[in-house]
Length: 171
Image 1 (cartoon, one colour):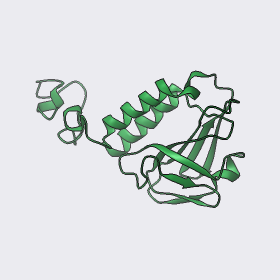
Image 2 (tube, one colour):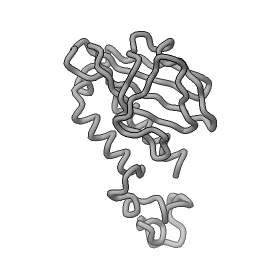
Image 3 (cartoon, rainbow, N blue to C red):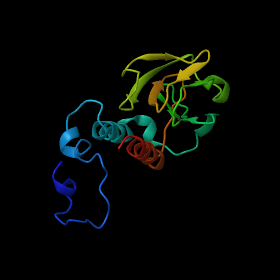
Image 4 (cartoon, helix red, strand yellow):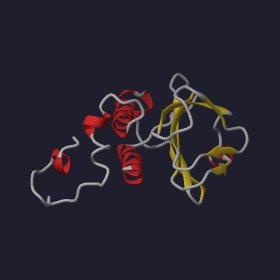
């Protein structure tokens, strides 16, 4: 919450430091606020627990560097009935023009956005065209799906990594 030391301690100097923005960035302030770090974390957890591709082994996992400050990963299954998952992350301070299809062979021209970061310029369910160079804005994180007969999954460790990135960068 926004009380002294974020509600973790009443001490004048807590054992661990509290972030400077704790009055604005805390569970009480972010509860039910669309696009908040808390809501993004909940969406990622829900996706991990409910998406069919998440219940498989890591056999179809592939991660690639798109540019100096961006990367993508996917997880592929063989079922034509299941959606595939693609994650794009730009952790740099400037937009990156990337050719995702060149780095991750077999991706379709279009994917549909499922989860985005707090400051995203993309909208949930927006179609993204990957057929040509794609501009990935600064500090952007996207979880997208597609159905090309191959499904993608990402592990709990990578979900935690995305959440940690958002917290470190924006808190």
